[in-house]
Image (cartoon, rainbow, N blue to C red; front, side):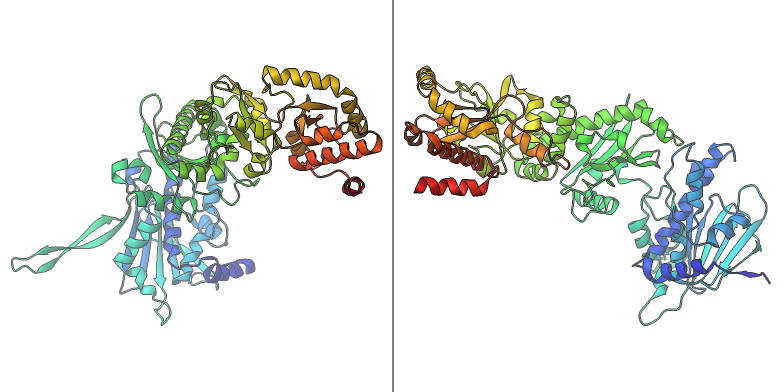
Length: 625
């Protein structure tokens, strides 16, 4: 009679938690046990490659399921690595002790193979449906086999047993059916097939089960003709099938199941290449950003397979930062099964695949832009900021890749426009691509500086993201047209007559401008006349150095208080506005009040707060009396 060994006290509590709390659906136990069997086969194959066994063919591996309704047992059998007595006690006698995780750690330096059962808890999900579990296992090499047996939290026994073949078989004695739970369903062939298809269809080894054959007698009736072995899983991942064989619904379901998204992808890219670069890829453009996309714990990268073996869960080298939102898998036969993380970063094949994928993603996004503008707007609202940051971070080096994917609201179009669309409709007299920054397109359209440009028929791009102004400075020009902010001091919009009038006014109003500058002190660098405005009396423009928008963005950053990040401000007076005529002949403190009132008005229009609200209010009152 074998001695019963006890689980540790913590393990007993964990087992109870496993059975009653961790798994929501009892059917999940079959997925866990099949995954563990797949890991065991991986482990045996890996050690065979390292010289532990010779003559092993990967095609010999399989996972077999057997249901016995009379005995109420379900058996999961594999011909994987097997376990000796010590490993059975260590791996199954301690909850959350994982042989698969030990294996992963063992090969950490030699190669990175992703294994499923890394947490050592999946096996115990079987106790949700089984009243007793018997594990018989034989390891490659030794002749001895051992049996581990447990009825749950009371403990387990371990003793030698007879088993001819290397591998492990797990025999579950299912619980009796109750009014609330029908455990016998897991002995029905149709139910087992359904669960394998749902959860384990992409396991790379055949999952087999015997089924009854029947043949027709002369009288038309069927008779029992014995059994035959049926493979329940496809073993051929969806990305290895041709596009014509995969329905749109299958793509969507694969994406949802694999990447845990509730929504179908916005776009699917099924690609393959042979020759110098050999790979298959299935990429998805999400409809929305993952909840942690802008968080520190987000990991970009594609799932990387080599010959059906998972190499990396997140292969960062396959995606540039600008396309980090893409999800998908890449499978290449040319990658070594035992390739290490460090080697992978230097692998030329991976670099070549990444270059191909970059071009394909760009082409797919461009096609979406050209073919379905509304869908592209939806994508851009979610991920457009990522494209901008990537282009800025590369100092414009990714211009060829990303520039034509950018779009912005404008003063003349209902929807966003691209640079190419903007340039294509520029009037012949227009020299520059004009842009303005602000909190919203509606606010930008009301800027005083926009009126003159609108009258001339010039379109203005409305930039509302913090990164936009910095990006424009990096790009500098598009299609040989200089990018120019409408808040710059000199837009060169005046005709010869206006230029002459401005020059004359600079001289005639010199004392007025100097007096207003003195009243404003270091708030502005100068006060000048302008004809760029139409209905507004005043505006602020930027001198040399950073712009007003850059000042706003930089000062909003944490720790920016007190740093010298102030734009040079120029106060421009509209010489064609009645207010300018009103200023003539005013002197002293009254002129100072007017100067500060106009300056604060310009601040408010630009979206800046009034620097001294109390004084601003008092100045208004003084001028009203």
